[in-house]
Image (cartoon, rainbow, N blue to C red; front, side):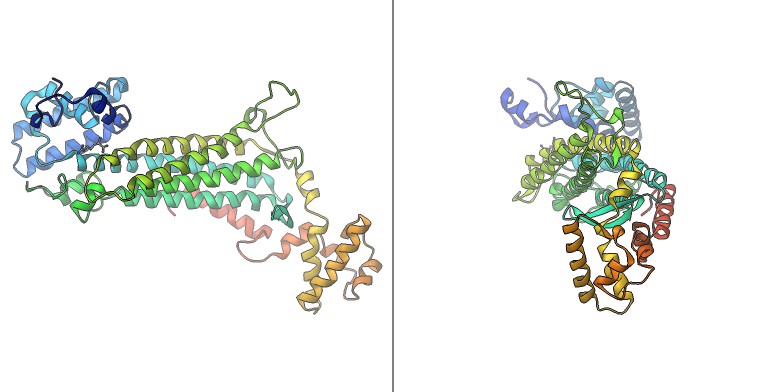
Amino acid sequence: MTQHLWSGRFDSAPDPAAFDFGVSFPFDRRLFEDDVTGSLAWADALARAGVLDAADAGAIAGGLRAILEQGRSDPAWVSGDDEDVHSFVERQLVARIGDAGRRLHTGRSRNEQVSVDLRLYLRRRIPLLQQKLRAAVAAFADQAERAGDALMPSYTHMRRAMPVLVSHFLLSHAAALRRDHARLEHAREEADALPLGSGAIAGTGYPVDTAALATALGFSRVVLNSMDASSDRDFAVSFLHAVSLCMVHLSRIAEDFILMTGEEFSFFELADSSATGSSMMPQKKNPDPLELVRGKAGRAIGHLTGFLVTMKGLPTGYNKDLQEDKEPLFDAEDTLAVSLDATAAVVGKLTLHPERTGGAASGLLLATDVADYLVARGLPFRQAHEVVGALVRRLLAEGRDFEALSVAEWRESSDLFGDDVKAKVTAAASVRARTTPQSTHPDAVGAALAETRTWLAQGSAV
Ligand code: ARG
């Protein structure tokens, strides 16, 4: 009968249907490298504790290194009908070095092994996602720089609100992505604790130096409690959450540019390479990549919710349910990676139509500036709001906007209006009138762009 890591206790081989159902190797093979890394450190810790003699420890280390090398040079080799990646590595080790290989699992359980593997995996993979996030932030920064002093309307309730610099809008998306970068960093920090030494649940009886083992594997601390460690996947949930929220941001970016590159807005032009045609309608230029990014957000959120439901109500200690952590986690990672690449590529190749955005930024959305003009001349804001409201009503009825008003007409609504009103009520003056550091004032946006560049150059420490 096929030997499993646990066959000793059983009279008969497992039912193939039940065994196949429990197999995780087809997907946890992705943890191969981490499994070997963890085992190398564990063997070393056993040797230091005097549990393994030098000869066995040397043979195990040599065997594991050879396995690592083979798996790296030939990823397809990491396969077989093993139950999971841990069984595969152990089988390969015993095949190479014989009995010494059977000593590796002393004092260790797969329950902690799978946890250490997943933590090591996230620690090495999260930085790759962060690198892609930085590329997306850089694409926004480059576009912001190119946009110069171009103006556009901003929207609240999807209705024109106030003029802003196009660069301010672009950097608004960079700001959200920077929070995602920090959130991924927190998930990485949460994964940064060594579970080895927890045994199956109660701890291990072998005198392993867990602090030294943590250091050897690059962990900054050891978990607090072996029982908690065997069923803790909070770090995986935090990762799924960070990914989901980043996907939510990417879906909003996608939505903005789907709208703004469409005929109704035409604020930006989508590069041909970022679009697809229609099989039937020759005129179509569809923003497929952006739509897919928007759609894939649902998938990432589904993984987060799904795994939270798996976690809910589990009794203390390892439960096989936890094997359900890997597929959502890997798929969330892949989804975010491709979505970030697609977003950076599309955003990087957008062409701005400044005459369209600038044209849309003037007109009645300067009403707040008109009210502010009156406030500057002493009128209480509520009254100013009313005066301008009435003026807007009149202009709407006449199909005109502020620019068309003569000074005499301005004065009809309030004698506080002076000759300077025409110069003060423009989109360019409007953005200059915002003065806070987070505002759309050209100096503030210039500083924000410089600060974004510094963040990118510093490897995004924050
Ligand atoms: N494949 C398992 C998982 O992903 C590894 C841990 C197995 N532990 C056990 N007691 N069966 O969770």
